[in-house]
Structures are given as structure tokens and as C-alpha cells.
Amino acid sequence: MIEETPNVVTEDGLRSLLGKGYFIEVVCRQAGEKRHNTWHGIWVVRAVSADGGDEKLLVTSRSVLKVREFKTIVGLVSFLAEMGSDAARIPLKEGGRERHAIPRTGPVLVKDS
Image 1 (spheres, rainbow, N blue to C red):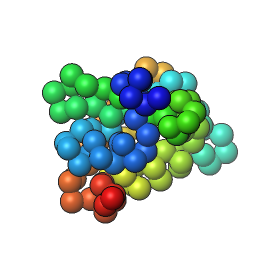
Image 2: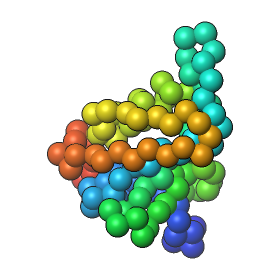
Image 3: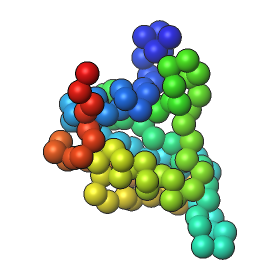
Image 4: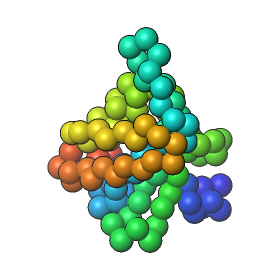
């Protein structure tokens, strides 16, 4: 089904694309707000090619093409770190976008098959 939906990518596919020079783009879908000591909102992640010509939205799995949403900044930062990011820029206003260039020498960019 992924082959039929070219504008989406799974987490493993994202790792592969990062190894090919794609960026991670964090998009704020619902404005962040602080509740107690944690920021909540809705953020999604896209893989964007270096020239911006190819964009793929991160989905939860191959069997269920549901957009992966991050509802806390803690969860989003953890995900970015797992992808090899050494910094996190999180847009707090709805519609905001921030790109992350992941070093190709990062800890978990591409899994060996």
C-alpha cells in the first residue's frame, strides 16, 4: 500500500531517506500550550528532499496509513534524538515549520538489512 501512496513514509523509510540527505520538517498542526510543566499540541513530521521537490508525511505503519502525531514536545524531541538530531527546533504556532538537517554520521540513520 505504501507503493500506492507515494507521499508517505514509515519510520524505517524515514531513516533511509535521512541517509540520502533528506531533512526532517516538523509542522505544528495545533498550537502548543503549556500545561503544568509540559508543552502540549499536535506536531507532525515530514521528510523533505534537499531541493524541496519531494515531501513525504510520516505515518504509523505500513498496514495502517495513519499520520503519526506527536502530542507533547517531550515525545517529539525524543523522536528527533532517535533519528540522529543533536538539536530540536519546535514551532509553537499552528502552521509553523522547522527543518532539521540530520548529520549522516548520526547514531541511527540507516538500519542494515
